[in-house]
Length: 109
Image 1 (cartoon, rainbow, N blue to C red):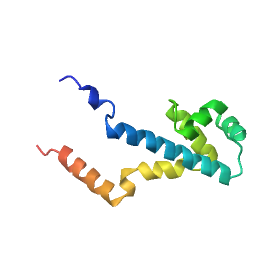
Image 2: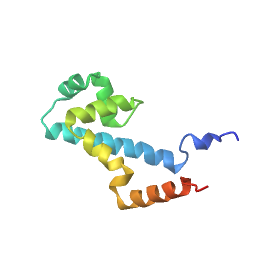
Image 3: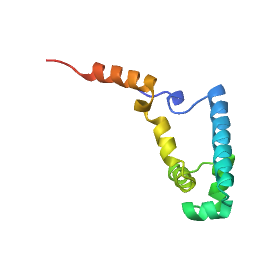
């Protein structure tokens, strides 16, 4: 079965929310950087990215690689927390969903 275009990317209000989420995410990273007393130049250099890439991440604009985002998060010391936040087994709901998925896949002969 062929995939529909909307299977690949958000549309309508979801697209607007995603853009807003990126701006909020970038703002949070900027606050972390400033709280740590890091300049944008220092953060970009330690992350191994250009100042323009850091600017795009912090403003929630452009298209940057996930690797670049994680490099910045690692420099700011928040990468491990972010990974823990998306781990489904770290929440009651995630454990419930994972348990249901495992039970569905197990087939007895």
